[in-house]
Image 1 (cartoon, rainbow, N blue to C red):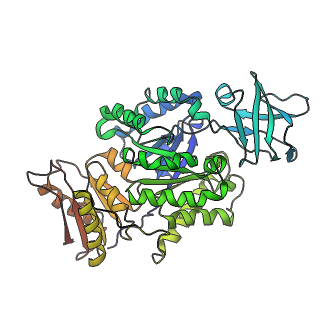
Image 2 (image 1 turned 90 degrees about the vertical axis):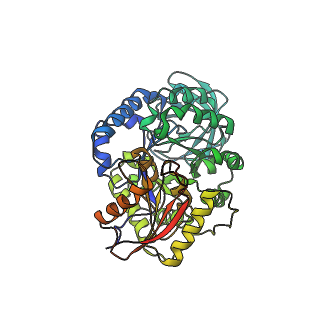
Image 3 (image 1 turned 135 degrees about the vertical axis):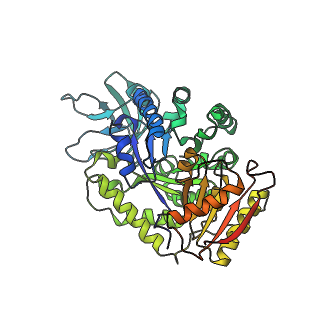
Length: 474
C-alpha cells in the first residue's frame, strides 16, 4: 500500500467577515481547501463573534473534517469603484469626489465602502487598483470625500481602493476587538509585522489562558520596513503572511519578487510557516480560465517552498469560485507530482543549538538514506513537526498529536499529515497505537520503512524521549 495522495502545499480560501453566511460551517468540510482566512472588519464584529461561537460549539459535536481558521486583523475594508462607463485618465493636481450616492455632478466616482468613517481621514493617502493612481484626501463628509490626484494614472471600473495606514491608525480598536472574540475557536491570528516584539509577547501572554487551544500568531509582511524588522520578531511567532500587493504599493514593485524569496527562505531556515497572498487567480472572478502569469505565479510559490497560497478574496463574489479552487489544486498537484523539480533555494547549514535541532536534522538525513516512506513524529505543541517540515523532505511527515486544536494547526504546514491519538501520551502505548493507526488507514505495506521521531515530551514516561528510530511496518 502507498500513502494516499496529499498535496504538500495547501490552498487557503479567504473572505471578508461581512460576507459570512449561515451555511458556511456546514459547507467548509466539503471544500477542497487547506484553511479558511477570515478578513476581519469591525463593521461585522457581531457576525464574526457569532460565527466563532458556532464554530466552537460545532467542533465539540461533529465528526467531520475541521478546516483550520485564520482571522486576519490586517485586512482592509472592501472599498470598490462601482462603475465607470469607460476608463478614466486622472492627472496630477486634479480634484475628484468619491461618493456613496451619485448625483449628476461632474467628477463624481461612486464607490462601495464598508467602513467609511474609518477608511478616510483628512491628510491620508488612498491607492487605487495596483497603485497606479494615488489620491490625497482633502475633505471627508458623511457621503462624499474630496481628494486630489498626487500620482496620475488610468482608473477602471471594479478596482479596489487601499489605505495603507488603515491598521496603524486604528490599531487600538482592532486589538480591543481581538480581546472580545472566543479565540479558542481560532487556529491562527494574522497581525501586522509593524508591531514591536514586546507587543507581540504581550498578546502571547494574554492567550496563555487558552492553553493548547491558543491560536498561533502569523505576521503580515506588507512593507519593506516590516521585512527589515522581521528577524527580531520571528522567534515570538509561528510564521508570516506575505502580502505582495502591499509590498508593491509601499515600495518598489520590482523588488517584490526578491523580497518574497528572501522572506520565504528565512522562514524555512527558522522552521516558520510562510503563506503567500495577494490576487492569486484574481482574474477568474469574471473568467473561467486563469492567465499564464497567474499559473506561473502559483507554480513559483510552490517551488519557492511556501506552506500555502491564498486565493484572491474577489473570487468569492464571482461566478467561478469553485473552478478557481480546482485550477489552483491542479497546478499544485501537477508540480508536486514531478519530484525531480527541487526548491528555488538551498537550506543553509545552521548551527545545532538544542536537542530539537539535533534530533530533527539527523532523523531527516536518516530518512533520506534508508529510503523511508515517511517520517512519523510525536508532537504535543507542533514544534517537532514544524522543524521536520522546514527541511522540505520529499516524503510526507505524519504528525501524531493528542489535541484536535494542534491537529488543525499542523494540517496547514507543507508536507504534514496530522492525525490524533486518544489516550495518555505515554511512549509505551503510543508506539503500538501508532502502528495500528498507520495500518488501519492503509498508508503503508508490510516492510515499508518509516523514521519515528520523539523529542522531549516529558509526560511520555520517566526517561528521556529524545530519540529517533528506523522501523519497518509489520
